[in-house]
Amino acid sequence: MKIPKVEITVRSEFSAAHRLHAKGLSDKENAKLFGPCNNKNGHGHNYDLFVTVRGPVDPVTGMVMNLFDLHRIVRDHIFDVVDHKHLDEDLDILGGRTSTAENLAVVFWGIVAEHLREFPGVALAKIRIHESRGNIVEYFGE
Image (cartoon, rainbow, N blue to C red; front, side, top):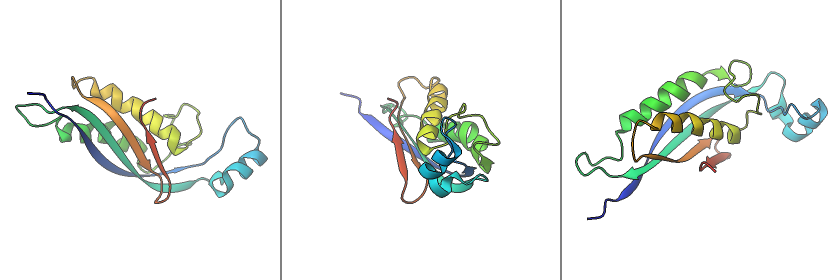
């Protein structure tokens, strides 16, 4: 019998502030490009983070992996780090990159992927970030 592969997703919410400001652009260029999101004091979002993994369904447990383990990875290594922080002022997780949702998705991918190594056969499939109701970013590790 073929073992089915299934995707599972956990959702986490965090609040964080940031300022969209590209270091390679002048203040005038940043203001024009990012508008009010370039406010020198920053602005905040209530982010929704979705982490999706894919793997075979274990014939004994019926799980791809224990959802508690996936929630723990996200909580311990992302939520506890970024919640109620200023992404540009309080942290260096972006390594100097502009704090766009796109860059957050790439950084979060690396964090989660590192901690999934202890779960053989489970692979990170997608990071999805809802920065706001109208702004959604998805990253597939490419």
